[in-house]
Image (cartoon, rainbow, N blue to C red; front, top):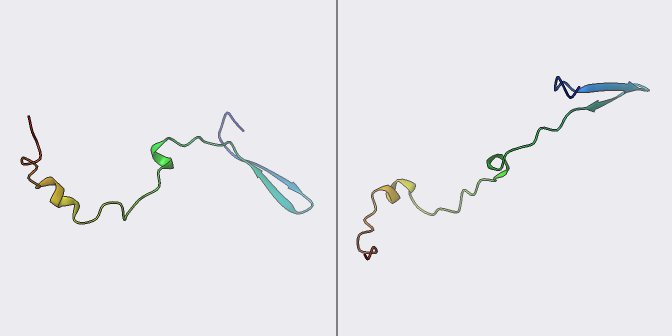
Amino acid sequence: MLATGEPLVIERRGRHLQIAPVVPRGKLARLSPHAAYLEGDPDALIHADWSCEWKP
């Protein structure tokens, strides 16, 4: 089961129990989307002029 990754199904009294290996998820897969986080048009950020904010 662990070597192949295939789940093991056990039947007892007409009911099925499935045992499957847990595949760890990466950090990026655990992120949840935040659709309302950025207000406005994301393409406007590409063409924004930030030269007045930058000071050497």
